[in-house]
Image (cartoon, rainbow, N blue to C red):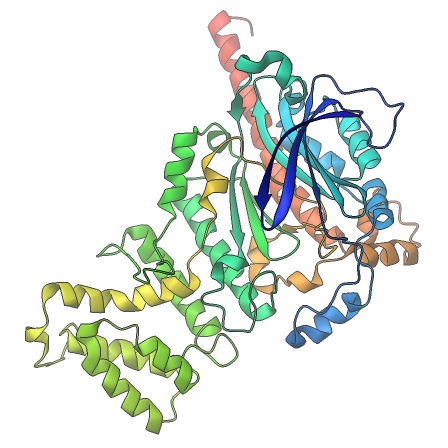
Length: 500
């Protein structure tokens, strides 16, 4: 292979070499393989060796992590087994071709991150394939550690250098990326960064609940699929035709619709409209019960379970509510109330203080300014939103040409599969129960079923439930609607031409 060095830059303390591949063989390491048509953009860098044993995620997750704690969860051999026996190529092809296999799929961009040798990583962009068989062969030969999916372009991405100025995006699913690292300032479970536990995973549950209702009720989208990222987050893919056709400006506006200013390291102030926008009011109604269940109690993030924590919370009250802060501090030291009861009491006294409660006869209410009343009245919602509202990586959603990790691939850090998630059972989803490659290998080896209904190896493993959910509740309804649209379009054309 011949590479031309373009530039270098420092990212996260690593020297990244950006190089263009002048001639890129279709199989890395196969000198006799035929080159791809056109040039392929490649990035090479050094990475840590991922073929190591997985350590415990958290001491509180001993039972969940026991099966994988001492197992090799990611290796070239295990990855080869997964790609050859379990990866659902048919699902991916049927989904991304949208019943227009001859025209759309070949214009879809894929990117591969491969590791030809431990510690060396190559990132290959602008891959495209005309058929499912081409995609299957490329993945099985290269065994990418990571697969990313991009937009549908005007021309096959592998020919992008040949067409140049004519090469542009035409459509792309509306996607959202939510990561637990963005919740570090409110995680009080002992986790931060890539470390997660079942307590902080509830933030993902709450985020999905809010995004689902907003996308379906406010925008009318129907074909929405959620996937576990394989480590510490979730991805959402909206595949409705209207969503795929959105311009970058429309995507940016839609992403901004869900944005809430939750403060920054320098400015802790949370900004919410008053009164709340109907979408935010609906979100507050959904989130407050989850806030009480997962954030305030001792079994959650302890926000109102210890004096240390409730002191920090009361200090966030507006300055004008100082009398309420002092009253609660004194009362809670002497009373044995539950965190939920403390929250109800705090809200009650805030409403009395600003004269909002019926029957309240606060003498101080008349002395509180209108702006202070609004701040005090908004504080409970601001607190709930700070701890529970979805924190989106909006840059992922704003541009058609933004790549996102492919569903069904494997996270190299954990060895876990990026499985589809059943939103109707989202509260019971356990990221530590998602199968790893070594677990899947054992399941295949131990399954000797001769059931005639078992047509795929993944049906013999714990991938069966999430894969069948994806097929039944997302893929089939999507394909049925697409076929109906095609029939309706054909009938319209026939009516116009008189050719029935």
